[in-house]
Amino acid sequence: MSVNNGFHVKHTFENIVIGGGHSGVEASLASARMGIPTLLITMEKSAIARMSCNPAIGGLAKGHLVAEIDALGGEMAKVIDRTGIQFKILNRSKGRAVWSPRAQADKIQYSLEFQSRLADQDNLTVLEDVVFRIITENHHVVGVETTRHGSISCKTVIVTAGTFLNGLIHIGMKHFPGGRLGENSARGLTESLENIGIKSGRLKTGTPPRIRADSINYNDVTPQYGDSDPIPFSFQTVNFSPKNIPCHITHTSATTHKILRSGFNQSPLFSGKIRGVGPRYCPSIEDKIVRFKDRDSHQIFLEPEWENANQIYVNGFSTSLPLETQLKALRSIPGLEKVEILKPGYAIEYDYFPSYQLKRTLESKLIGGLFLAGQVNGTSGYEEAAALGLMAGINASLMINKERPFFLDRSEAYIGVLIDDLITKSPTEPYRMFTSSAEYRLLLRFDNADQRLSQKGYDLGLVDKNIYLSARDKRKIIKDSIQYLQSTVIAPNNINPILSTCNESPVSSGVTLYKALCRPGVHIERLLPLFPKALLNRICRYKGLDEQIAIDVKYAGYVRRQELQIQQLKKQESLKIPGDLVFANIKSITKEAREKLGQIRPETMGQAARIPGVSPSDITALMILLKR
Image (cartoon, rainbow, N blue to C red):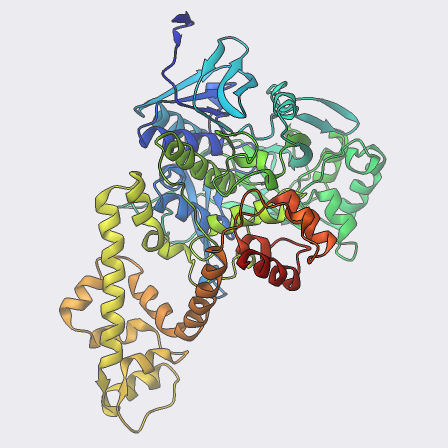
């Protein structure tokens, strides 16, 4: 046993997590809580769970991911509930399936809260070092090699290095190594993985400038508060009364766009300096004014980065233009005429590993015990990273314990959609979760994530029994309530006054409460006084459960249709494809299908059917072959 800086290098760690970002912390905590001696290796302990970009958690579809992480026993939801400074439900004007929670964070407290939870976790050690090599024997992980502490043995490794692998920062025509502004990049690990056969690529992302809060003219910007009755992210949060600190909105102008265009000759994005592919759905401001030439204005959100912060995040103004161009353009925006920049916007290029090389568990198909999670999979966003980290941590632990792997399919969770899209479509640009990506989104709402997933989290040992029992109780109350609605007939003289106040036409004969609730204008709160007191008391145990009952009733037809589709999906998912099948020898399918199937090597027929370039006729031919 050797001792270095108080750290004992010995054969006690079974799982090693590389990287302390949003993916790494969830992977580490899940692994340790499942009884696995876990080592988290990070370049800087004080940077653990740091918010590199926007100071917020959640948003469209991303809020669904956070709720699912919580339902499975992860930490992100609980941490943002403790450290958020404004909470809001987005998309309220649309259907309930696409409502999604979002919170502004105190980014300093958010990081500190995660660091505290890591420090208090049994089975978990945090080491400040840099991993530059993965050690393998017979195509299986056996350890890692670090800069300061030498080699450390283990059974599994989870790489969650974010944007740090050969990270290169661009500001104008200047570029320099870095994983974040002011932090070193990680070198050697990509090359180590390439040497054992893992293919890599380059992606790009960016971040806006940070400006001084006291240099903003607040008379010319519009305040934007959160909800007055906010909903927490975590199903475990009680007595929720967070702060409601405003953001502010302003907008660019034609003058702003003219100034930005004047700096294009020094833009690394347009000069070819940046070779990595950037996120299509979160473009830089210079990219936006090129792609949307007909628009002479774009919204800008001014977001405080922590409580009482004098540092404001300029959301919507991601850029890598020269600092002087950034400043001049910002000062052309209403309210920012005298603004001062604290940190410039910049772009960063980094290495990633295309996810077709992974199994559904996020384990490498080539190297046993090697898991990849987070931005190294080609994703963007804290929420996507955290979800992948949680799943990798779970599956690494199950592998060590010689238990069956854990999957979520597309019909069960947004996390299932995320992983399936990554490994079957293998995006070549940073992947971002959208509600439109989930074909069963009516069933996958954020408000029912605990009912969908908490039993799975409980079975894994990550969710407290009381939380699981609470979710089961909710399901039972919903079922009993719907049965009551279906079996209770109300006379016209009792229901018509209610229908009248809801602007619905009267009835001439008795009608079930279920049929009444199916009417678009009838809200469930108008019918609750007609419920038995005992059932009403059960419903009132849980805030918002009455709305979930109403959703299940009003969308029952759509739900049944989706459930039939899911049954069909599961038939395909149950058809396994032999791991040694040589697709190149199958002449009954197209050449493109042979190439795509050979590259991605899907594990099931369902996955094969979702690969771009594989047609229904290819799937039919493949099914005939497998039946033979």
